[in-house]
Length: 194
Image (cartoon, rainbow, N blue to C red; front, side):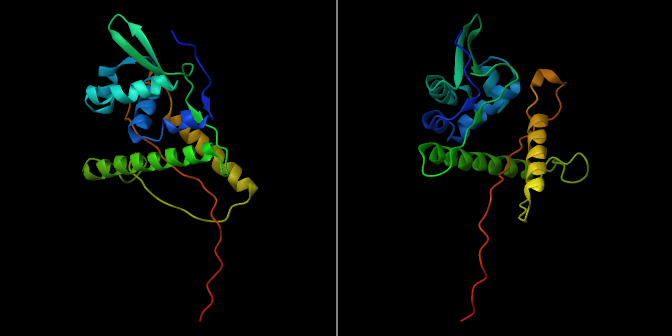
């Protein structure tokens, strides 16, 4: 078995491995399943053919983000973290290779979110109102102070805890994806009239 490594990723080359929507979905699904799985099990969870996953799994394994294990029923895959932990990116803003890689990952996350949303919107059974709402896209922009920002971060962390509970932690309910972006924006001065 490969040595378990840190959940925090800061190396630009490792981060760049996740700049593919397919690889993001593979890592998210491996972590959601909570244990080492075969390619067939992963393909079933993703709703994709298994043969389309081998290339990405090989890239993730060679890059050290995913571990490949020999098992009696074939090869099994899991992320490099300890059970219950998730891979996380460390951001190094500025003109850095890390920031470039993180930016590409964020763009891929948003592409995956757009596809997830479009698929769910096409499903007439998607719940769009009330306490069981499962489909929602919004953008808010406003002024916050340090206390507001701390509360936003606390709530986002709690949302991620809820969504990222391992499959074995509770009976299976509905599989959902939660994607969000929090970013400071520059206030633009009003344009002068000519």
